[in-house]
Amino acid sequence: MQYYLLMKRKHMKTLELIFKRPTSGNIKWTEIEALLIALGAKLTERQGSRIGVRLFNDRRVFHRPHPSPNTDKGAVVSLKKWLKENEVQP
Image 1 (cartoon, one colour):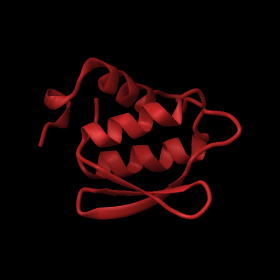
Image 2 (cartoon, rainbow, N blue to C red):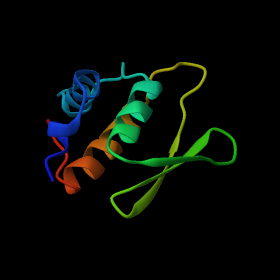
Image 3 (spheres, rainbow, N blue to C red):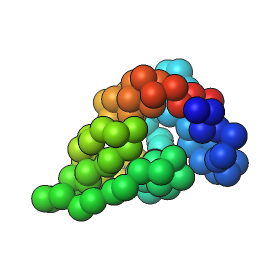
Image 4 (cartoon, rainbow, N blue to C red):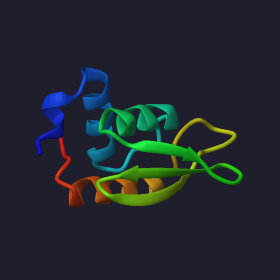
């Protein structure tokens, strides 16, 4: 499915940042959450700063960054791989 056809411009911009090379360390977690929700994800609060993401008939657990609002580069790489495996690319 071509998810990008259904996305708002702000979500497309976040998707482009996720796929940017070199990997960006300046993507706010709230923007990633908004993108995931736009793709149809269900988010659940887990213990501590963890958040469960159910998308593509799969579950992943990510850590919300703190105290900085920016997402760790390792999490961005992991998210990019997951999106790419499910044919979501800019």
